[in-house]
Length: 143
Image 1 (cartoon, helix red, strand yellow):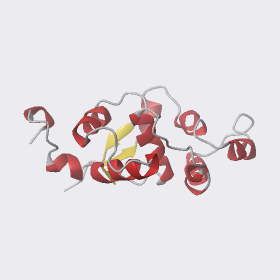
Image 2: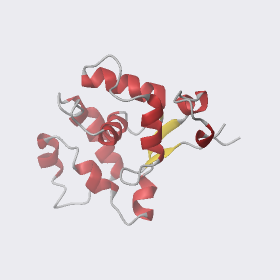
Image 3: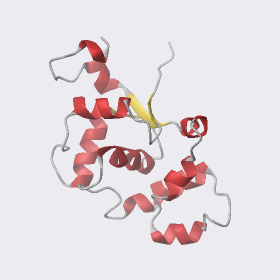
Image 4: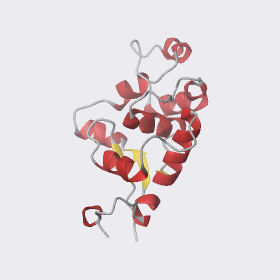
């Protein structure tokens, strides 16, 4: 069932099972830079270590650095952060491993110190689906 056919406010099972990831290629297709977005998430120590202004840092190295170090800092994801920024950072902290909506909301709740994330899965699905800034995409399963 397509999302537009739902009007009861409940989350469709298909939405819960949809895996999300950062589509690095989306940035290039839209004249944007993934590395610039990811660099904005580096902790001060890693920012200095990588010296991103003086050399080209691969996307793989950025993802590994953020996953292994920066995402461990206490304020990497926090409750005052906009929802899509939180999701972007969560995906970075997981090394951009595709993750289902249900796990996104659970992990964000854990990281933000609240039992249930501050917005419904249905609302978060709508935000993710309409993202035009962070390159968040649904994983397409091949049959």
